[in-house]
Length: 243
Image (cartoon, rainbow, N blue to C red; front, side, top):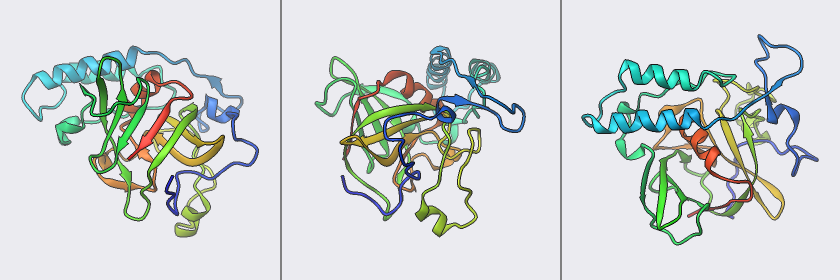
């Protein structure tokens, strides 16, 4: 894998294969002091979201969600312990809507293939199809490519800026707790090679306007709604190719 000077997150010594409690559980530190409570994952928001997208796609190109569709989406994510800010997809190129397409690759089902030049992430499905999402990729000088695997997954993860990031922006904290302002967003998939953390992630974002651009420090950003969907569809151990 070609590695960029920046990565998404600081390596944590002694945490190669084990999720820490603060990455498996969520807490709003301002309102819920004490021991965090576990998160229950549900496919309901994913199904409601895809239904709303289908209804939106059936209307005129570039049309915004109706009030009832927006209300349904907000209700679907109500069980999330942090706010999922629904993105107005009408302001984005419709190419970046999640969609199922004939797979342009021959990888086995369950593989993730990222094409930075196109700003697309493909989840390979059976029968020659693939689920395609719009993403943001590494900015100039921070892009990378190669093969890895998803060694672990996290719901509303903690973010720890790398030393390089903090040297470039000294005001960055050592740690950012889960929440709407966390740069990793609602979910994170951690990419490893040979049992070692690459420090690269596929994750949500607190900056949805960057989707479809070269904006990250090497990681693959997705809309929070999309990364929640992807999280439910991929297994730990899934192969990832960035080409």
